[in-house]
Image 1 (cartoon, rainbow, N blue to C red):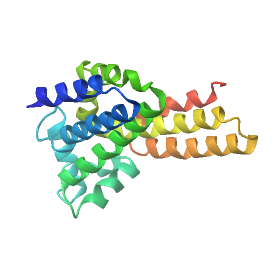
Image 2: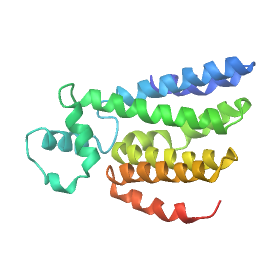
Image 3: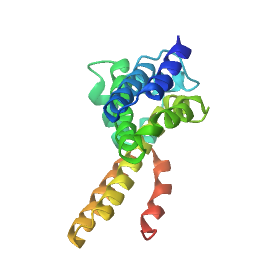
Image 4: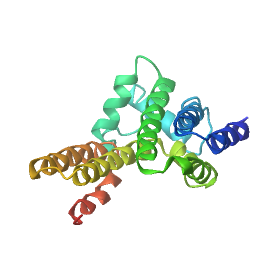
Length: 194
């Protein structure tokens, strides 16, 4: 069944001809990606680790909660009344939305299918994102941070808007760091001149 989804994710945008059809096909493809990511069960290597973290945060203290970052712990606690699968669906919706937004803005619509083919068939892309849920969530905040900076610089806006873009980016990076500490690596990238 997964192969049918992957085939549809790639082939539907390939046959889209008009710009509107390509936009709709991208929405369709990301909807299928959301379905794969949100409704997983023991699909990935880290599945048992995430279930263990969920159980620890929500009462059954199997690991040291202090080792987890604040925003990640908070997101797990906020999803507690709705269950672990709701948390998976929310995170999948978030990163599918971020990726959709970036692809729609940064990739020429004629090449949506090329991006999707690479993203779905390259082992270290889509399924790695599904496997590393917490890291992916942090990575999406990093991607949003840099997109904010790039957008602020592109629009030939006044210096106060560029400053505002950097402030927003720093806040997004701060959230990312509080989801997964590895996001610290992205901080020096802010210092690279445009």
